[in-house]
Image (tube, rainbow, N blue to C red; front, side, top):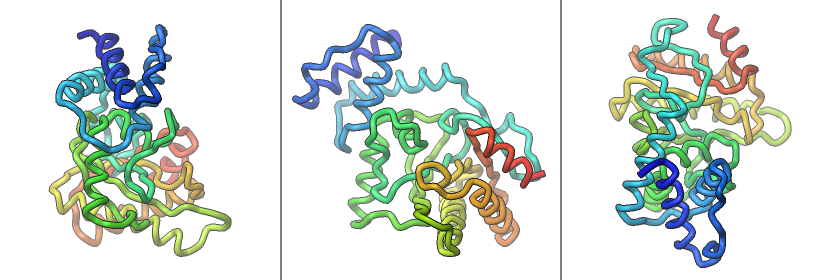
Amino acid sequence: MTQAERRIYLIGELLKEQQKYRDIEIPQNEQDQKRLLRSLMNVRPPQPIGEDFLTVQNAYLQEETARKGITDVTDLTPVELGIYLWQGDITTLKCGAIVNAANSQMLGCFCPCHGCIDNATHTYAGIQLRLACAELMEEQGHEEPTGQAKLTPAYNLPCDYILHTVGPIICGRLTEKDKILLASCYRSCLELAEQNGVDSVAFCCISTGEFHFPNEEAAKIAVQTVKEYRRQTNSRIEVIFNVFKQMDYEIYRELLG
């Protein structure tokens, strides 16, 4: 199947799942098709689906990521021993694990085509990820506390695993508790990665987007926590600070020298 054929097949199967979507016509335009497919994946509840769908979906998503271009952490130059700064799309990074800034439900973003990293991570990993997260949460029996982390497979992403962590939401002034919780996100991810034999972790800018943590203060906490962890534990885990916005790149570049 071509990418276009895969895309139309996937859209058709997802439309058939829900009676309310069955009258929606598949657009002719490629970009409109991609938006519709992503939207259907974003709103789909966590539930199983047939192997035929997964086979086509996996091939489609892996090809889409390959077309965007995959960056291997081994091709990056460290800014200091074991620490990297990289600007780009974290869903295209080949490393041990990437960090997803999740919400307390831990099921991904349900808002169609939303620009958050949670949406992108679930979109390009595939619909298996939401089901895996739902199973973790059912076993846990309560929402994910701020500052902790969970590990899942990465499915169709080029990394091996995804670390999901819930950062603090800032409403009003920044408090000391907010800072402690954000530091806990970084440390929890590193500890969980080590426990599972993950040798490299790419951190997004946790809490700085929809959760409104001030960018510069968040970066200071991120760098300090990672360096303290590596020093205190003698850890050899490699850390990539991933940024998307130029503003964040400049902040981290200044902090890392």
